[in-house]
Each structure stands twice: as C-alpha cells, then as structure tokens.
Image (tube, rainbow, N blue to C red; front, side, top):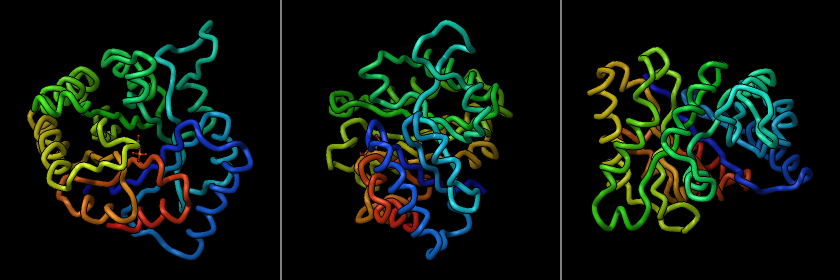
Amino acid sequence: MRKHIVAGNWKMNCNFNEADELVNGIMEILEEKELPRDTQLIVCPPFPYLEMTSDYANDSYFMVGAQNVSDQEKGAYTGEVSAEMLESMEIDYCIVGHSERRAYYGETNATVAAKVNQLLKHGLKPIVCVGEVLEEREANRQFDVVKQQVEEGLFHLTAEQMKEVVIAYEPVWAIGTGKTATPEQAQEIHHFIRTLLTEKYGKELADEISILYGGSCKPSNAKELFANADVDGGLIGGASLKADDFIAIAMSF
Ligand code: PGA
C-alpha cells in the first residue's frame, strides 16, 4: 500500500547556520520519537544546503529533496541545476511545478513535464504540485484546472515511470495564507486525482501513488486532513521551518 509522506519545503528561507540548526533540531527530536513505520519524512532545503542536509540524513531518519531542477540535461544554462547533479549527490526527491514557480517563473505544464522527465531519467522521485488559484475555485473550475495540470504534466509517462511520482495538491489560495482547505475540500480533489489516475493507469497503480496535501498545514489541522482516505500526507511550507511543528505534523497519522 502507498506510503505516508510528510515533506518540508523550506522555500527561500534560512541562512547556513539556521539551516544547520533546523536539521539538527529535526534529528534530535527523531532520536527520541520514532515516526510511524509507514511514514516517510523528506526535507527539501534550498540548493546550497542539500549537501549538508544529506550528510546529516540517514535513511532511518529522513530523505532529502530539492525544490527545483532544470528542464535541460546539461550545458550552457547559467544558474541552473541539473537532475544529473542531484543524482550524483544522492538526492532522493525533487519538488516540481510548485505554484510559486508557476506564478513567478512562468513554469507551464510543459515545463513540469520536461522536469519530471529529467528527474525520472536520473532516478529521482518527482513531487509534482498541482492546484487552483482563488479565482478558479470561485468559478468552480478547480476540477478542470487540476485535471489539465495532471494530464499535461504527467500523463505522457509509462505506468512504470508513474509509480515513482508523488503528487501534491496545493490549492494556491491556501498556501502561506493561513487558510487551509477543509478536510472535505482536500479529500474531494484528492479523490478526483486518484480517479484520473485510475482511468489512465488502472486501480492498482492509482492506489500506490501518494497524494499529499499542501497549504497552511500545521500541527493543529494535520490530523483531520490526514484522516481522509485519499490524503496520504503533506507538503509543508511555513510549519516545516520549526522542527517541533514539522515532526508533530509527521506524527499526525
Ligand atoms: P505553507 O506552504 O505550508 O506555508 O502554506 C505550503 C507549500 O507551498 O508547499
């Protein structure tokens, strides 16, 4: 059966010392508290701290993910980081198509598809973000938007490739706003995504894919969100910057 996953997306936060303290804080808590066996914890720091974080990481504690990757293989792309580089550093996961990348850096579903291809080629697991903005929710267009994101970003993959993918549903109106989707709203879209996966790849595969919720997830609401049948964990922004809160969320299954 599919894994529970709690992934911390630090975004562009923490200087080196703060990052070091945060990872240490997570390690210290995990030395005392054991996570449920089927829960995978992932820490996604900014690029410059990946090495430090993966040096600390031990598979029994947490895995490490990047927040972005180039859609190109290698070469003259100043400032970009390739999937091959991440692979050579033994990074396990990478967030793709976060709404902030889509909104501020012009990433399209086609960019997402190209990045997913790069990651899979180099053995990394993509955490692919989808979700509607407020105007789309108000116009009741959330299903169409998410369907298009899932189809255009992922449905070119073979079943074998799809098995490596994690999907994160992040309603953009809930990210960093303190407004969380209700458990019913989250479950409704998660179930919708799983139905799309079932139609395309069959039930067995659809049942194996972890679908995470993201958007103002915190210790006080994680339990009721994670209690839903199709919510397999969370992609955590703000609350992942505090070791206590991050682990409390991971203990919420
Ligand atoms: P938030 O961010 O938890 O701060 O709302 C979630 C995300 O953007 O992944």
